[in-house]
Image 1 (cartoon, rainbow over the protein chains, first blue to last red):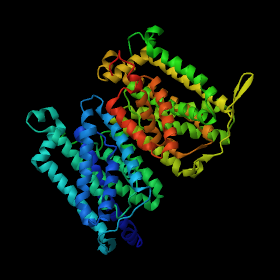
Image 2: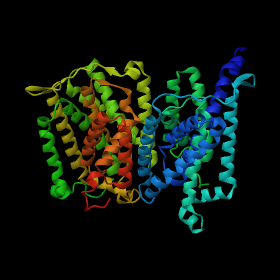
Image 3: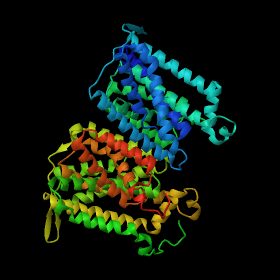
Image 4: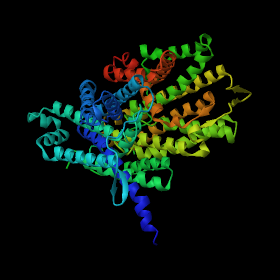
Length: 297
Length: 327
C-alpha cells in the first residue's frame, strides 16, 4: 500500500491542521460559555451575539485606523464590558428566582435578537472582510499553512493556557471555583461573590471577543455570524460537560476534527449534521457530558 | 404503581374557578367567532396563522407550565407534521382524516421514542436535547433532496374535509378559519380538562417537587412522557393545517426560530394558564405583522418584548389577572 502515506500526508494532514486551528478558536468560545454556566447555571444564548459584537467592533476600530493589532487588544475589552453589562442589568435581578436556568435562558435569547437586529441597523446585512495582518506561508511537516493561521493557533493555545493557569493556579481562580461549588459559604468567607460573577461574565465574553478578532480575517463579519457559531459551541459544551473547563477544550478539538475529517468523505452539510449527532449520542449516553463541572472534583 | 385512587372525581366548577378568568375564555371564543365579520381576507389568513402558531405555544405551556420542562424544540413536531401532511397530499391521498391519522401516529411514535430519552435528562439538559433533536431534524430535511432540500415542497393541494353528508372545502378561507378555530378550541378544552384531572395534579406535583412524588407511589417518568406526547400532538395540530395555509413547507419550520417564538408567545400570554399562550400567539403574530408593515425591525421589537416580559412581567398578561395564585 504505497499510496496510503501520501494520502495521509497531503489530504488528511492538512485537514487535521485546519481542524486544529478552528478547534482552538472554538474552544475560546466554548470556554466562555462553560465558565458562565458552571458558575451561574446561566446558558448565555447571547454569547454568539457578543462574538458578533466583537467582529463589528474590530471592523469599526480598524476603520478608525487602530489597525489589526489595536483591535486585537481593545475588542476583547469591549466584548467583556458588553458581557459585564449584560450580567449587571439583565442576569443579576433574575438570579434569586428558583427557575433561574429557564428565565435567564429566555432573557439572553431576547438580548441576542435585539443585538443581531441592531447590527443590521448599524451595518446592514452585507458581509465585510477584514484583511489578515500577516501574509506568507509556513510549512508544518511539509504542509503549507498560511502564517496568519499559525498565529491564530499560537494565540489561541496561549490564551487557553493562561485561562487554565488563572482558574487552577491563582487565588482569583480559587475564588471562582469556590463560588461555583457553594456561593453562600464562599460569601461568608468575605469573597465578593457578586464581583466574581461580574468578572466571570467579563472574562467569558472577552474570550468570545478574542475568538471573533482571530477568526474574522478567516471567515467574515455579518449579522448572523454569531448565531451559527454559537450552535456549534453549544455542541462542544454539551459534549465536554456543561461547566467543565478541560471538557470544553478537549471537546472543541475533538468535534472540530470530526467535522473536518468527515468533510473529506461526506458533503460538508452532512458533516455538520454528524457533529450534532455526536452531541445527541453524548446527551443520551452520558447527559452530564464527558467531564465534571467546575467546582466539583 | 400508584395506590392512591386515580378515579377521584374533581368537580368541574372547582377546577375552572369561574371568576373573571373563567369568563375570559368563552368571551374570547365569541370574539373569535364574530371576527370574520369584521376582518378582511388578509387578517382572516393572519388569524389562521396566529391560531396555528398559538397551538405550538399551547404545547410549550403544557410542558413548561405543568410538567416544568422547557422544550426548545417543539417546532420539530410542527415541522414533522407539516412535512408529512405535505407529502401525503402530494403523493398519497386527498383524505383529510387519513392524513390526520398518519400524522398523529407518526408524531406519537417520534414523541415516545425521543421523549423516553429526553425526559431522563434533568432540567436544562432536557431543553438541550429537544433543541438538538429539532436542529438535527431540520438539518436532515435541509440536506435531503427528496424532501425538497432547502427549497422545501411547493404546490400542496388543499383538500376538503369529508364529513357524513357534506364536505368542508378548506380552499374557502372562511371555512378554513372556522375549522382551525374549532380544532384549536377542542384541543384547548381537551388539554384543560385533562390537566384538571388527578393526572394534572400529579404532573404539577412533579414540577414542584420531583423528589417527593415517587415516595407517594407515582412514577414521574410515565406522567412526564404522557405530557410530552400530548404536547407533541398539540404542536402537530398546527403542522397539520399550516401547509394548507401557505401552500408550501420549508426546513425552517423545524427551526430554532419557531421553537423560541412559541416560547415567547407562551411567556407573553402567561405560562401555566393554557389560555394565555393562545392569546400570546395572537398578540405576537399580530404584533410582528403590523410592525412588519411599518418597519423591518420586528425582530428587535420581539427581542425587546421578550426581555421586558422576562424581567418585569414573568407571569405574562394573564399572570396579572391571577392574583389568587402567586407565581
